[in-house]
Image (tube, rainbow, N blue to C red):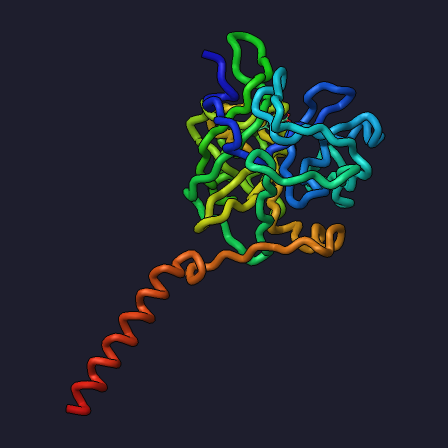
Length: 283
Ligand code: 4AZ
């Protein structure tokens, strides 16, 4: 069966921040809704053609050929690629896309939280990449009509660099994976994001929130051994995102707030024990 590269069909409403960025009416890239007016995507999606009038954004869809009554299509008023993007270096591969009109949230259209710069995504943490990008056919690649989902573990930058050096003629000290990138996927290959997924989310669940850890950016091929997917690291770009969208609230998740239930029960137990001790001392 043909799948994303090793992913599964998603359910309606499962990834309500996922958008399709269309160029002249055709699916071009993925993106993530972060406010009622702004979408995060990749700079390389806009490199040849950044005329806003050629782009539109489809929200609330699962099947591109039949997006259904919960979907909406909105025009684009502004495309803001990160100013450090130069193309081949792959750095700064994150762009902000402003919608012509604000969208109304629904069960199918919900923004994803943008993490504060201090939030850390740890190696082996399981996250999800989603998109309508290339699925692996027998000898050629083909995009998917139904939004695909794939669970991918975070890979540390050191490990990712070491993997990219396997079977490569590059000098040993070369750092392929820069500080503004985050890797996720499998050394064994077989499952990965691919062309057409670009700009889409690497989403990680932390406590009760879904956070945007990365933006699908590049890789050497797709789903190849020792060549995991590389994503733009959203936390690295937090100051830049803030400068473009000052009203955006960033999410800081720490172990205390994600463990609030245990903090509350610890507090309650402490009060009960103190009360018992106090009563005993009064007898
Ligand atoms: C691309 O060409 C592309 N395997 C996107 C993601 C990946 C590779 C290539 C990740 O847009």
